[in-house]
Length: 328
Image (cartoon, rainbow, N blue to C red; front, side):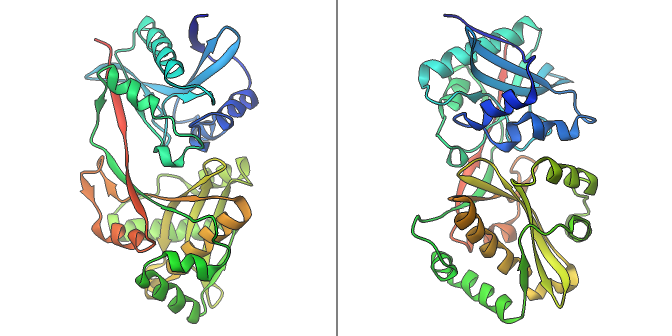
């Protein structure tokens, strides 16, 4: 039976249920997530079917540039590209790519660009997507290095977790603990956190947060049980924090490490991160904690200090890959 790709006409619940039950879907592929910035992007949702059975979905936006008309999957998301039904292998991937490319070329697209979720974050490895991109002459754009920690099954206490970290990270955690740092999980005070975040980015990079406070509040309302703000307090004052997202049932992703500049030496993040990792492992059975990239401009400007901080948690580094397929 032939595979056919078309614009998805169903409801959000069915689309997101497919993503959650897929091989490689994450929160960033869900319609519920992508719709939070619908005022910025006019998103196209595609679904590939075999008969009446959904086999894949892919969301993206149209971009016109010097290379022509592009389908960018997705411009407003950390990860994108085709999300594949669980249970299939090479033949699924091959036919899904053929079908999506047929749709894109029939609709006069000149290229297709997508950034894949690293395979270690997926519920099931789906590297046939990368294979198909390369087989079709896809160009690998300059990759970025993302950092993650993979937890052992037997960790059930902070002492066991700290044993997995470097001696430097263990000392930093205990120093912050002795200083009286208190950590709040699922802190509702997004406004104070966003203020610290804005200060951090302005001081260090002369930049602003990608997300406004209103957008963070909207995302939290959309995902009350998958997005958590974890913060550090000293003398009842918020001094640091990070936003944590559950990508799927096995992995979490940290966004926006932020520290109040006048409290940097207190080491709030040194306590926030281990506490968050242990909570995720114990309460949500998360085994992969992703710190994200430590560079800008598609990996061309690595931040060695940020890499050093993250690697203190005995992390691993893996490439985050973006592919671009030209059709002519």
